[in-house]
Image (cartoon, rainbow, N blue to C red; front, side, top):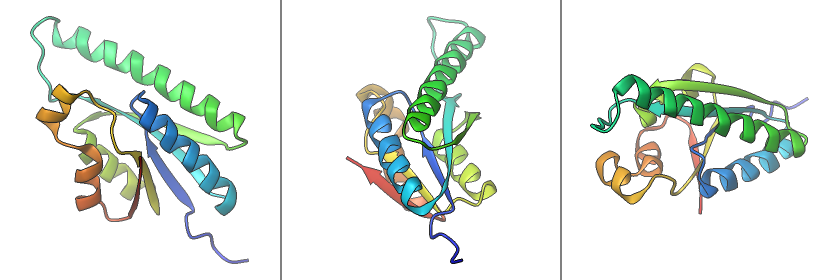
Length: 142
């Protein structure tokens, strides 16, 4: 039996409609290649916010991330795909690249947008940074 081209597919989620669309594409590819799907949410720790205590802010993001991952897992299950969920904290792009390497991912599927325009101004485009820095293939969904 031939080894699948895409054994492990990483799908970073952020709760946006673009990441959900990326997840649906990932499910379709996973069905065709009999791949393992890994869903990731990264709590961005570098943004500072003055309105809330940093611990409260991070706790809000963790709760949101868990909801996003549970919803993503439900979507994958409805599509007939088993998935593993992981939440990380740190720089979004760095954590995606590290996890893709550690999990031996052959493909990262990401939405082309997701963050609000203000956040994107400070962080830059996640999909663009991934395309330039990832050691595996990147599929950017529009």
